[in-house]
Length: 400
Image (tube, rainbow, N blue to C red; front, side):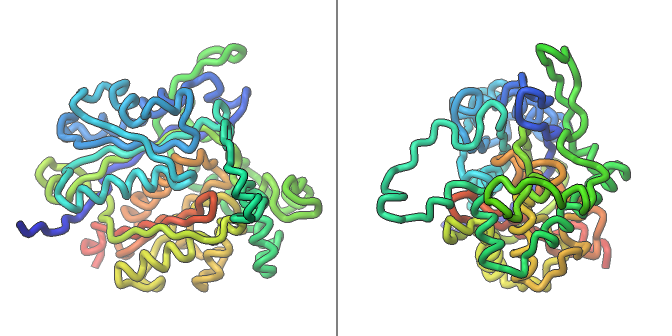
């Protein structure tokens, strides 16, 4: 039997507001699996043409798979969301690229004709489950010098990037961070971000009941002066600060994927068409450079060049990591095609959830830019990896 490869489309994506991790954060007393339930119910509500029983599989990513992020959360959250018990589910862990991997893992069987529709998600409650909670690294990593000791501390890997590329100065990192805050503020003022957010009911022993409707981390009015005096926690007289890096955050994301012909059959939106994807490994002590080889692989697989990409969503785990990507491909720090709504430095980076945030943002950029044919989402990944997905804009032909 001859089986042709089918096109996969990103139908829709939503997310919770992102909160600050910790006892004072908006989601301090909200369960991680309940955050997933909120985004699953909302993305399905927004796409009523999709019968729930048509969903072939559910994948949810979490970096720390324990407690309320454990119990095969892809399956448990699906049941808690009211999906038919006939719909299976599983969990994914690729650290920061968890949700990105949930999407690519579900896309492959759709391409092969094994699935028609799938539901992807990601969650990280870094307040309940700090990064590295319960981890017991094998002593061989250090005893046999398989990795540099600093490879296990993400902030130190960012400092190592500054060392490796001296042109990536703290001044450039701070300027990029200020721009991220400014673009996020402008996107909020223009009403661009709010439609992607799912309001979440919250409760707090001291604050009582509330409703989370906007991101908690953004710092409107951030200036170069306000960033210049911040401490460098990962190295004395270093360059990585709380101002030019993403914080510790809580939040969840969800997205619907479908075969293009199935989306047409059901009358579902086609926000983006998947073109190619790739993951790549790099030296763990400079994990922030991971998006470079991942993007090169994804471009080669699509027979495209960086000049073909008209919009970029690059996860801002650290400003220096984005700058390393931009420098490699000859893109200016302030290129308007890069993170038009700002990024993780402003809104936050709840690890495994962020990949779908990038995709949801890119889908909105495509709507606003019918003259752009291709865009990409890319991110660095702990332990020395990078991931990139290239997407095509279905609106492109309409604008030409």
